[in-house]
Image (tube, rainbow, N blue to C red; front, side, top):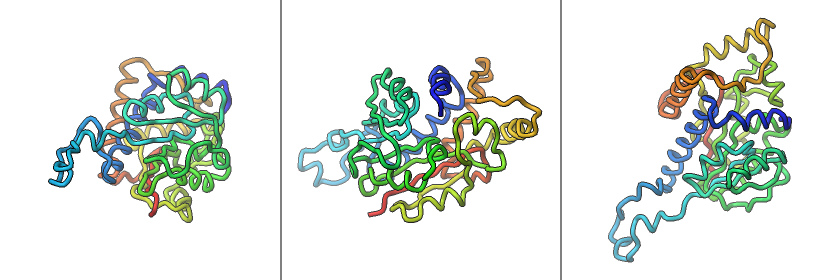
Length: 271
């Protein structure tokens, strides 16, 4: 993605409905699946489950005082990284100097690096890794996913989002520097041999899919101007779209979403 587009993205992603909702979806998936693996929300300490812990003088809040470590790989301009840093011990990484500079302005921890071969983060030291609309930009996406998995502790999770529906390839993808769009099958093929097992693979951005697909098809047929879709809609429309899209955080992994403009996966590192 070029520097000019990154700067435009940095100017709108705090307010734009799509970015806001995606942040909520990713954060919800992280907490849900980290909690399944024994890492509850630090704001909700649990009571001791056994006399052993209580007798040792370790309170539930002390036992869970360490915030889960999360790496946001391909952190872009830093809005998601800032959201993650509110709940987690989060660090970002990006190959773009512009992105690193933007993310640094937020006060979040961020380093320069590139998947799959230039990752200046310690292997086996993270509870979770996020690849939010990153793999579609990378030539060797399989190697990139495997490298991200190497950062995880055993039982750690990777949350992946990618654009779906190859038939909707358009100037939007070209403007954003995409190399591909994915199907469920092509995304699942990346997990093979990566030391990761899928806990969730699902379409999302489903509720707004008909309108989004229609707009992309019009663009493909030359009936709508090519755009990077970075304009923030008027206030009320922006809020309505945010609420519709963000509502899918309650559906992912609980209700089958048969189609969508994007795909999400949650992957666990194998022992």
